[in-house]
Image (tube, rainbow over all chains, first blue to last red; front, top):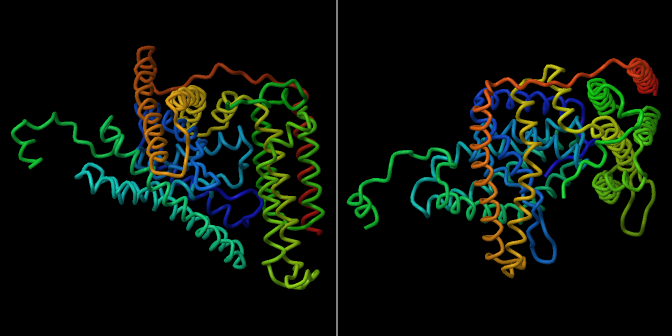
Length: 215
Length: 250
């Protein structure tokens, strides 16, 4: 989901650039050198995953997955998404330089918001965790469409139809991203829970306690 | 497969200093993005396409690269003239075509073609490792450059990983359909990509520490001076002045 070159007005592009730069600065500050390698590789995985097309009816959509990137990286999602978008622009001509800021906001703002909303829930009981992950995928797309719509509306009020169209066109994407994020988080909880935020590194509780948990 | 077909060439543009190219691309994009006047936009678009020709790309390859943008523009031409109301240009039965919509669609088409073509000709004609080094010399934060280079380095590795997992899925008879099983399979695939990326990051980080990485990314790249740089800078500067004059007088 991104806005093409040449559509937005100067002030909107400038605001987008400044806000994205600020977010990236915060993200870089929080990423110490021990974690940049991880952020870089996760950004690469995010880049590759966004090339995956999943079928929906006769058509197909590509995954966006900014919600999960938010869960995994927190504020680090900002620099990771900037880098991934820049690479997309260079390798596939998906965008140029002037929309980099706005497009970063479209993906990274929902990622960070989802991090704050849903990260505390992913290590709770299974049902809560899966519901939170579904919400994370759904909300990340919804908010992205809202940010994109806002950028269009601030450019030109007549874009209202386009904005409504964007949000309604993304409803199936929201549901699919929700489902995929939910399964993906379930997978990560099973395979490598320490990737998810707020994982308690203490060893497994004593068997007695675990019994009482399960009953 | 992800490739960089434009990065390695031997055109005039490929020989220019990468820093100069990055700065020119940025300045050109930011200026054109705020233009409204048609003479300025048309000249900018022409200049950018000329740059694209100068970069020695095959026309067909270049068009394929621009297909995403062109598809978007086509959609725009279908929507805007019908919805962007104002003076009526033509009536087609029950629907009207409006002038403001046509004007806006034309402006956006010229602008986006100009920006993307210039960006492709100037920035996509260098390997991303060179771009990273150029950005580092231009005082872009070191951490961001490091992140860019790491991401670039491992995109190809992770894509291979993805193809391997995808082949394994296909061999087991996976066929994508609109149903929950498909979505679960793709979600596990994505999860596996993240798990492997994180594991690899850990190993890479340890290996870098073993080799004495202390947070500074040294670059041995030098960008030697070349007379072509000065001429290009002068030409780019004059084109920008002409564009600004066209915009203000237009």
